[in-house]
Image (tube, rainbow, N blue to C red; front, side, top):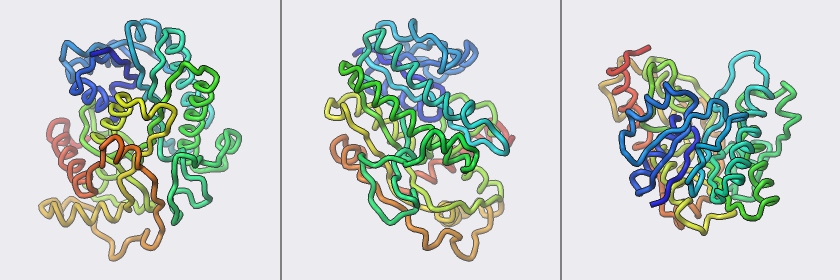
Length: 335
């Protein structure tokens, strides 16, 4: 089967995409930012069907060698950090997401690689003032209304700046495809992604952003954030590969959201299903701080019915995450 390039191959989602692609019979080349990271990733994927390419900077890096003899590109590499305290929105989030995406797409076009999947986010979709906390159903025609100027103004929370960066990067990809009709683009829009970790990890201090609140719960800390939407990482990776394999997704946004829940729901589930962890878990509040807050729904017909990826239940998603974090704690220590 043909060779594909996966950028951000040593990331949380990217590594699972590599695994799903190998399982589907593809030869996979994955980009990382250093030779050291390449060595680490080859230990995870020792298959002769997997190789690495070093691209030190997604914004300015040269993809020429990485794209040689490649039939398709899955671009996942983008900053997924929620800065704490003061930060430069343009430098840390907005410009790397937009310019990094365009750098990869321009390189693909130059190399004659026309089939492209770009990982976007559910955050690029909510078009109403309440965003995820509206009693509505969003679809592929909905777009987050925040602009570059608003996100760069310093007046909005870091998470809103992050999702705006994803929206702007995705729009830049669609504009590029419109200007270059030979490009066969699909974007995927997963919810907040939870699940087992297979990428190289040296310390739980470097845990991916989405799994971090569950790790906090396992260490007695409960952060009562608002209601949100979720999906599991294995199914998310499958959506990418099945999108690549199905031409019906060309020119489309593939929304993938399994359901809505609150951090309280996560914690209550862990208390119920893993009672042996009670002594280390955060205490369960008397009531859900986010009770009564609506959670938007999403039209995921393309992913769930046409591509046949329903996603895992909340219980399986959270418990698989918990069990894997406990595995990592044994291997790496708590720090």
